[in-house]
Length: 63
Image (tube, rainbow, N blue to C red; front, top):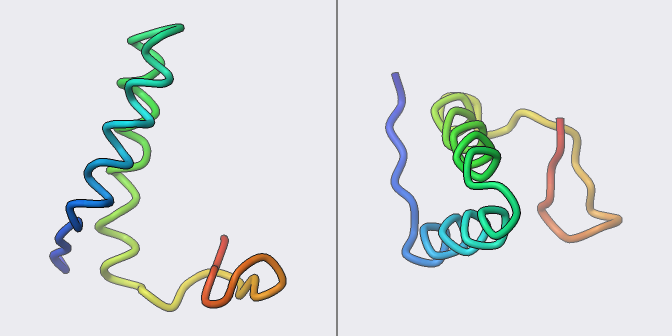
């Protein structure tokens, strides 16, 4: 299993996402953050996965 570490900015972004979503539904906010966090191990293991989307932003990828 590959390990990853979030930057302080990424941690703050996740907190901001949770705070925004929780204003409407705390359970949904919890679930959304869990879904995001569950993707990180796979991204750490396969960092080159996804289709390049340089048309949106340089070095951006989606799956």
